[in-house]
Image (tube, rainbow, N blue to C red):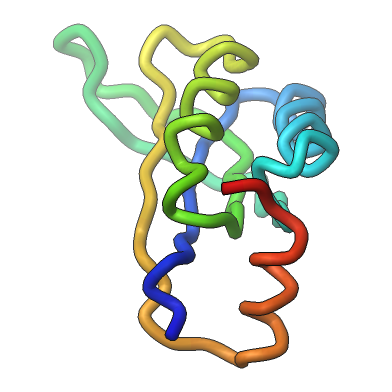
Length: 107
């Protein structure tokens, strides 16, 4: 079963900030792995205005029971007032990879 794991998405405005967050989360065993994707283009409404920004997307793999620690650490390191930090459960996957995620993260 893989229902104890999740993928977390975080968007960051600057590549160097994304790398700093990714490195901290992996070093602290809050995430087993972080993929940095981008640049991506994000379109969103903020304070009544439509914004179009270039961002980097972090894709993190971790334990669901460690999400709150990960969320708090991202919020601490992130420069945005309201950072995107969302988790999606992993419903299935390659068992050896999922075991590795478990081995590399703290619950």
